[in-house]
Image (cartoon, rainbow, N blue to C red; front, side):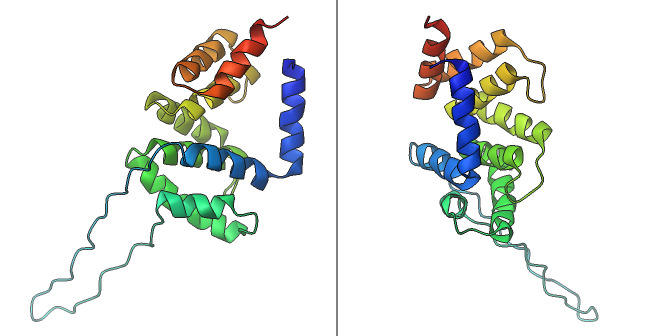
Length: 183
């Protein structure tokens, strides 16, 4: 297949539905490695002197595990409200250094799932995930540079990211690299 055919397939996949595309991505990436468990932080207890009024601590919103967040993302029946509820969980997991959460957060930001599209933030999270060794994020970095999405098109940087992803064992990267050298 030529690159033009690959782009056509990608466009058709988007037309079929973002849920199917995200669902396939989530299935491939979530079940390849075990997720890093989130760090549970205790809510501070309310303290007061005898003359002060004691107010209960403000409860932080309940965060989902990566597996629960992915389940919501994979479900074609998830509403925008449900998808929006996934975002804080992924943001916290990503901030804690979970490379899969970084990837899924970037995917949501790129596609505008549960939030408005933000290519700058998507690129930033893809880069962080790729630097931590997420091979799927490396492929996304290659696509950003190949297509000139939010960054200037740069074939050399695109090939560099594809080679890193291939070295990390990503079959899509190997296929894309083979496509470039095929006549």
